[in-house]
Amino acid sequence: MKKIVFISIFAASALLAANIEFKNADNDFKRINPEFDTDVVISYHDSVSSAKKSVVNISTKKVVSSSPHGSMDGLLDDPFFRQFFGFNFGIPQEKTRQFSSLGSGVIISNDGYIVTNNHVVEDADEILVNLSDDDKEYKAKVVGTDPKTDIAIIKIDAKNLEAIKFADSSKLLEGDMVFAIGNPFGVGSTITQGIISALNKSNIGLNQYENFIQTDASINPGNSGGALVDSRGALIGINSAILSRGGGNNGVGFAIPSNMVKDIAKQLISDGKIQRGYIGVMISDLTKEQKDVYKNSNGALIISIEKDMPADKAGLKRGDLVIKANDKDIKSANDLKNLIGSLTPNKNINIEYERGGKVEKTSVKLADMDSGKTSQASTTGSKESVKGLKVNNLSEDIRYKYNISQDINGVLVVSVDKDSDGFKAGFSRGDVIIQVGDKEVKNIDEFNTAIAKNKDKKTLIWVIRNGVPQGLVINNK
Image (cartoon, rainbow, N blue to C red):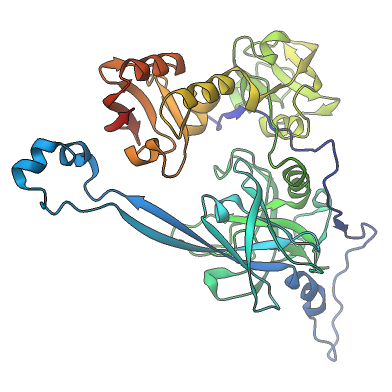
């Protein structure tokens, strides 16, 4: 069975141009094989020297607080316990640890905008940037992040920087020579060489939205966020991850295509966030056996419809095989996901699908995943319950993303503000709250009601974390 893809669609193209002008590489070029000459040394030094100046080293710092006594917090705060054993019992205090990490980034404007991976700067308390030809260290601020494609934009206060030239990643071919530029293992600016091993790679399991360039150019820890360039030195992708059993390079690296990077960067710079469409279906590729049932051998098979969502309203049903969207052929589930990803919420998309051996047509109006009924409820609910804790109902999309089984009911913790009541109580992103006091909760309304009933007293809240129930105590005042 091929891996099922959940289609909470993103729309990454910005309608309004961002305050940035990208340098575009010349599309009028030709590919040649080098000729043999005893008096000639083949070198790409001049080709990549300019691109190298556009790649920066990024270091981040993050302070993490941890309780030294874990689940004994409530017991150690009990006055009887402290009086019985003495007030100078020597209870260990909360500890903080500082974590550092290294990565890379690529300058995309001469006034300091830099693209990198979201995982390089995620949750960082401080981001420092070093240019390849400058010893000065710059403090960077986060402009916007998109965890679902692992792209982030940061900015430093600098002028006259060397912005990289963007290539059109739709023109790439397997076998093209490429160079990876970055900061592996923190040794400084490094260039490695390889070829494009494959294109349009999806279902890797690294990001929610994937359309990777695969390369055998050496990509190692610290290369994340760096540049993958062609033999002209034009950017074709942002290095993102490797597949490795031992943590080292095995010749299987992945980069986010430059066209996707450009679209995401524009919207992050102009809006600070990415708006994503939502149609409320789950889709998969056709299996070998399923192909015998349909006249079309390729497409995106709808295997689940969420009630009252756009696909349901448009009349789509389980078993429909989507074969075209906006007059473009759909050969796989990933094709449909990426196509709709170029559209913004509230846009209409024309769908052609096979049902019962006949081709039907419909129009679907995309909803906004971030301002739909679930997220609206969660934002209001979280602010009225535990301070610093934002929660969501368990939609099918969330169950898929966080691998939450259908037999678990509750609300998902989607974020925890640092130094808030929720943070101090020990809540973590990804926890599923299943019970407040002696009351099981299945949605945000029940969660809010249970919290309100336990107001002004310490309350034990049960969560599922990594499949294991844990009890956390909040002082609900």
